[in-house]
Amino acid sequence: MESVDDLIRKIQPYFSELSVGDLMSSPVVTVREDQRINEAKELLRTRRISGLPVIDDGGRLKGIISIEDIIHALENNMLNSNVSEIMTKNVVCLTKDEKIMDAFKKFEMYGYGRFPVVDENKNVIGIVTKYDLMIALLAKLSVLYVHDARREQFVGVEIYRSIPKNVKIVREEFEFQIDYKDISMAGTGASELKKFLISKNFPPKFVKRVAIATYEAETNVVIHSNSTGRIKAYIEPEFVEVRVNDNGKGIENIDLAMKEGFSTAPDYVREYGFGAGMGLANMKRCADRMVILSSKGNGVFVEMHFWRHEDEN
Image 1 (cartoon, rainbow, N blue to C red):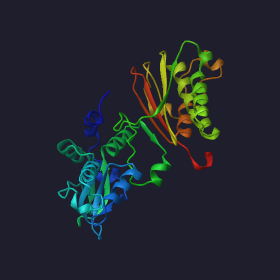
Image 2: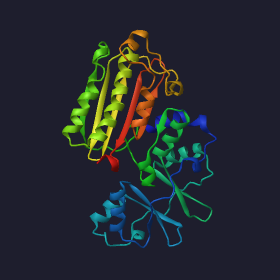
Image 3: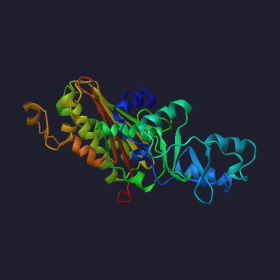
Image 4: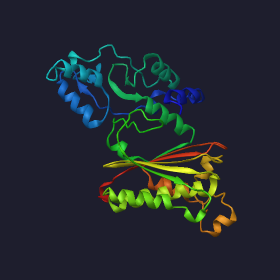
């Protein structure tokens, strides 16, 4: 599978009009230079991020602190020291008016995972990661569909669950092979996943959402791909990621396929009660984030993310 860098490199020239301000995350989780390193460590842990801009009392950028710096502090028994003692002081920054292509060149040149975005007074106004860069480009290509309220609630949190993985997390897994040859078996994988999630004590409302979306994705493989496929799920206490892929005919026009009621299912499939043209729309409606990667003749890859909502507990 291609790396994030490879993917961005291939498609970013087509979107030269995008600027850093169009994709940066703001406001930003920061730490003051006079705070203790232990406080920065807790921020990194609780927010699940790997770096923090360091600011002064006026909000001006003074440095950046990373997990590597925290490890160094642990090794040298410095957790009660000020952040200013271990932070990187010569920070490479972006401005909101810089073009996306310039940002990508800096990612390539320096190898960093993120860049603070500052204004003319060096005040931190945002942050850009490779993840943000990829999301912006894919969104422009109309292959990413997001309605992720949780990211909005935790502004500044970098969620490294993308394609491909930037962070390896040990999680329980579920896997099911889809047989496209027997249409009467469509939905078997979704049913097995439902049983699996129930056995892991996920609440019924949450499980229902995951099962519906997975059923629609599985059915699409059976109806449209003319190929075997696979369902794979990864679970954590508050989160489930489901991937469904096949090596079949692919989707020629994702925008059109996303429209409710649009269907290319043949008549014999409709006789079984499938092919109403609501599959992708229902998947998008149920998932908190959905990514579709496909092209004609190259199969379909669907990744869906589900978070437990308060009303589902």
